[in-house]
Length: 373
Image (cartoon, rainbow, N blue to C red; front, side, top):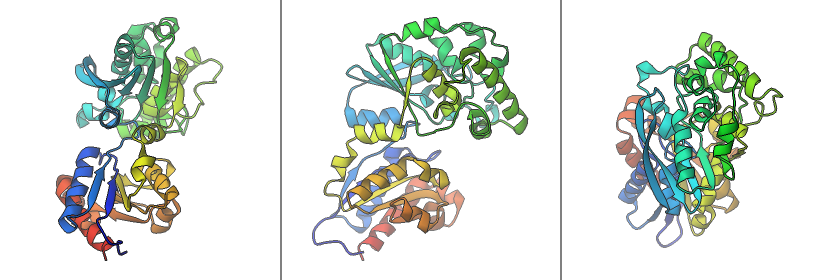
């Protein structure tokens, strides 16, 4: 493709490359690489998040507001420092800061023990700071406790049985949510996620996400049974457990719904907040990306959302990813013009993982050459 006369404008709007680059680092690497080939180009950096890691950083960059930092209970019980954003009377909480998989060493990963208590502590802190709407970004969690830890932190009882991971929920006894609901009286609670899984069953939190967090097949069965027993106590009619999104973040979505929360697209919330439509105006090309671009990416993950918006405005959109596992026809059907893989361009998975920034810069320089033909 040949550009029109004059400097081109590239909107660079990636998600994080999980385990290697933050969204901001990825965006900067693409911009640096593009400028190697085309120094006159205007690059507009727009790092993004779908509600998982990077949610607070991305929204702070877009919205301003004040970042609050506090110490909360980490996924294994030890304290961790976490942040949330307060913009006016709306707080944005990134659950992964309190219970993220990245906070648990690989050898210690056990979704039967990890807790969401710290997420509840963040929510409580935000409410004490004046928040009347709390948006909780779900994604990247190490937990599978149906949000019981969050409920305990907000006052649900028996707290000693709710705050120690999903494995203990089979013996939680009668659960009283009144104090937790009172703590959030007058507060609008929003679960920001693009996962539509229910809490239980073959499409539920334990079966779909448990293995990613360290559960073997036997533990998946035990966790699903424990979450079923818990749900029978707190959701006897079954109305909440089957709601799309209840299974997000190991069932954290379920707990937020129990407290009167609603589910909202994390991608839509972020794209609206960063005013993507306005940023697309005048752009000649959009570059988005993530660590692995696969079939799940086409079910509403962030690059898909960016591509749809770009397509509506007639702007070509390309995807850069650590690995691309989607065929050209599938990508085109989603509004994606081209896909580019770090593994292919660098020649190995090791290079793509250990030299991600360098390899992404080199790939972006090559993309600029191809698009300037």
